[in-house]
Image (cartoon, rainbow over all chains, first blue to last red; front, side, top):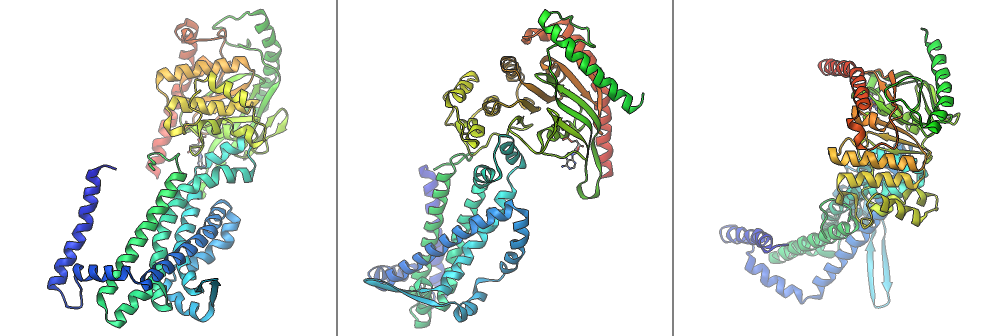
Length: 260
Length: 307
Ligand SMILES: Nc1ncnc2c1ncn2[C@@H]1O[C@H](COP(=O)(O)OP(=O)(O)OP(=O)(O)O)[C@@H](O)[C@H]1O
Ligand SMILES: [Mg+2]
């Protein structure tokens, strides 16, 4: 990418900092400025608490996202491909979809267990509630885009495959799956973003990770740390979406205008 | 003449042509311009038989009769072009032969057996290019044989060489020009060695020069390995240049208006296009198609007004 574009992107980020700086100097005393937050950030970089939160949240997102992809992609492809299967499954899923993640938290806390796992030196607790809610964030965009991806494939590709001698499963393998991939990829990029959104909501209430760190900074009154949490979440969300985007683009060399 | 009588006549005439046609080519004796019972090329038995085909579409209550009571026999190794105004049901007929659509009434027989779904023995080239965009040219070319685990690399390579696609095996379709994509689709089809080739306006998107080259290439391929071709077009010159027989269709509901036997020596090249015989055929076909095209246009206008 050329320098001019990077410069524009730099300006974009710098302008947030400027707005923030101005807002903090004229705004309420509870709003810390960039300088206070930067120094808190530097301090936190040396704290194991911070890195534990970062690792825990990242692992939760990674696990939930992987689960969502492993379940959502095949399910979506099948729903889009097979009308009967779609009729049996899709209405039930559509009923669950509008339920906001926060609304799942009481259910999760009451019903889903926390499982303690120890791997020799490190032992940690897997909160099924947080995993489940994070999973939902990634699952629905992936599912819906997979379905749409299949439905958007021109029927003539399947016809062509059949006329060339492909059986149904071969058509699925060689036409439906690759044809839906661009849309699946879009779903994964969106899903990765929503996974972070849901993760933070769940962690704030259910515990652990960057969400809890941010929330307890608020209840404990250390306001700059709230911003350390927010910025960290923003950066991690951005980085992970970018990774998904790049991996996706590398898998789709046939797309017009695809650049890796 | 009643429907049934005319059917019987058609069949009788067909049989006649079948026997006569063979002598024609053996003697190399063809009189250009003498349309009628003589055949431009030897044909065996009817390979494709379309009997009283009617196809209606019923999208949300609307009732569109796309094709009505259409009879057509296509002989073994015959090259038939179908000429008709836009929306007259050309693609519908082809899709019934390909096995994508079931006839509402009537039947399509291949070697005497009713069509039951698509089959690799009936290869299709689509109206708009349908190479798999997610596969390279090489992968597209070997797709058919690959489905049967029977890839003959030499043959695929030969086909790619013949069509000037060597060196593009690893390119994706969108990286190729329209003409090259069309050739690649032809390679994909030929790699499967189909008995019948169904081609739906395959060259309509190409520029005039490329189109001419593609037509010549198609004829070369067809002359070399005997195949039966049904080629749909709305280009009068193309229809005549390629065909043993040109089937002219009416505006919707699609029926056969007339059949023109094209008695021009093969192998043909573009010099044919300026011959007197060619001009005569072209005038005749243009006259036939003109009224139908007008009717089709009126239909279209009426429909848009109603909607
Ligand atoms: N799936 C469908 N549902 C409803 N109507 C259809 C459908 N497919 C085709 N038709 C209609 O049937 C008629 C014949 O369509 P068809 O595609 O066979 O025509 P065509 O001769 O191939 O036209 P063109 O020259 O535009 O390719 C048209 O009027 C079209 O609008
Ligand atoms: Mg058509």
